[in-house]
Image (cartoon, rainbow, N blue to C red; front, side, top):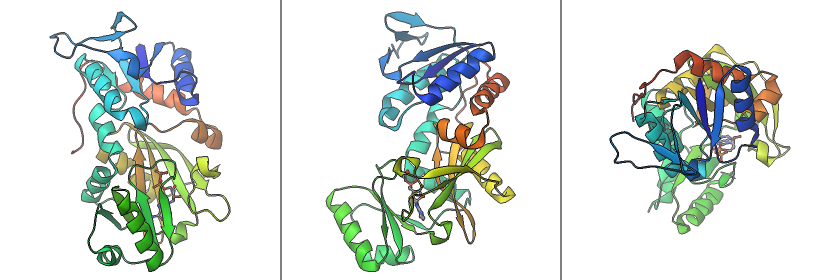
Length: 301
Ligand code: ADP
């Protein structure tokens, strides 16, 4: 097969591993910087140009589109879809998963366990908002944040009020969430391919830190997950319409709760923690499913 990897940087671990795994399995691979792709969207025969060249003949495309380039990246991916190229994850599913509010609403509609969560932009009655989600302690999240930045634990009602007021002053959308204290500063990353969790790791925050992000000094370890956690992760990925996803769960007293579904999950942490060849599994998934003109908007958006 001829496979394109949409990635801004070919030296990133995940990109390198995918290229390596595809070549090992006898495929031809090319890394394309998504921002350098340009196209005539009105042509009857959709095309993509890259560095002056008309690129064609790809059987599959692996989108590794960073959060900061979602808008342009999904447009390029849509063009591949219009050309009949099989996308590992569809553009619609990626856009859906990048919108935290939309994602949580979709997951909630499917009855998937979530921490009690409120959305707000400029509430006139902050006390009522706090009451609505069950009172302090609360986790308040800036919607635009990544890697744990803009995620604050407010231990008291007073602290919650001040943080919400501060975020309101920034004109930001915020998410106010029940604090799952029993997860003990840890979360579980489930790597889903198709209808299976192929690997799982527990990420534990540094001492005294409730956020488990590896970028914030958290550490990762292999973990055995329960059948309920497995099925929750698979259902969450399916709800978003993602073939490959990183589903982050919190272990609560009332079962697994989904925090986030990531459409471009990194391979480095999970391959290191589990010793598994996840890149090869991703390529196998493409081998199994790639056919021309397969893009259907799956899931409900
Ligand atoms: P980001 O997407 O920026 O990483 P998250 O929403 O994943 O932000 O939050 C960062 C970390 O904070 C999570 O990995 C988790 O360890 C912790 N966390 C987030 N929400 C909660 C919550 N409601 N209860 C307990 N811990 C949480």
